[in-house]
Length: 545
Image: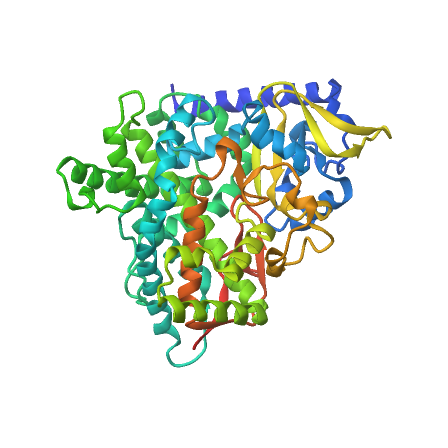
């Protein structure tokens, strides 16, 4: 069968499906019709373009403020989906009734393409539980404490690289570029026992290909979001992986080819690291000897080798964990560090106060503040918590109802028929966007200053509306790292990275704004750019102290 014929068959099947969905949506009533929400902007895409627009912050904020904790959103061809940030509803979706709300098919497809059989790709069920069982002990405080010297080593190399740029006076630096490099090296050293980058300021020494791949993938995912929803699910069911690859190579679509090339780099890098580590494990290499091999994957591979047959992860799933760990830790850590430094530049008083706390701790405990003392520094902790509250690196998550269900609400909605809604009947197959951003900034929970960045709020007792709400997030009262059985397994790892890098950089540099206006682009991972440019970057001015 020729590729041309296959393409025609796929196009015909897709057209028939679209027509069927359109006819069905025009005549079928739904309990979601009574939920208030914005008017559809297009019959073909509904409100999805506004919802996933990189400049769509105003749309998200306006629907959250106008309609409340549950908003009906029109999807393609008059389909209905829900935008959710009601705290009780989120508690049921994420924790209490989690099996009823599966990972969105599009979300799972993207994860499977990017990570293989990793923790983010396998959905719910026995395989997910088996992987969590093997991984949970690896991220405990004992192992994280042992990683502190590794992280400090990376942070000192970062400081040295930046110092080389600003020795002769204040210089504008693309902080995002350096934070991407640093975050990749942190997860390389702490997660894999592998070095991606020496963090030197050498324009003639190319960065690792993986660094460019990771930084380039987020805009592509947003660019291909509709294709992931409507085209790729159909295409992924046709033929063998080899045939599918031939179709991808043949189709004249640059974004798809760029996505393919990035995935090739990610897959090749991960497999090479795995092969090297497995060979070292089998030969009793140094990193697998007692008291060596502090990185996450060395520990995982040792424990996996000792596990009973029914608990042992196959190689494909171990490789999947490596891919997941590299990408998730690099993207979220780099954008969080960049955001904190940007906020430091905007708020010099906060920067001075945090620097003073860090300098005092260094004088008391030494240049590399020990793990326990570092994690207990109150203002450093407040800055990290407040930044992750107001600016979560991943502002939303996608789910789909696995069965017909009833979703209780913390605050009743006024339906379009004028009656109050206290619990919402949600049909099977309904797509949900869980807005972490809106939940973390809900004024009914956090108070009238919910959308202000105020680290000091964490130094006094939080409002009862925060502390007495349903216990959902693994990260104190926040949805940033999720909750329940699918909570981010590496959130403590991430916290340690943030705090060590800040503890090394802020006593050494003053951070100031450049004369360029910065915009933060909405996406699965939020990324900064200069206004008017599509290139992800964050120019800030560094001054050596």
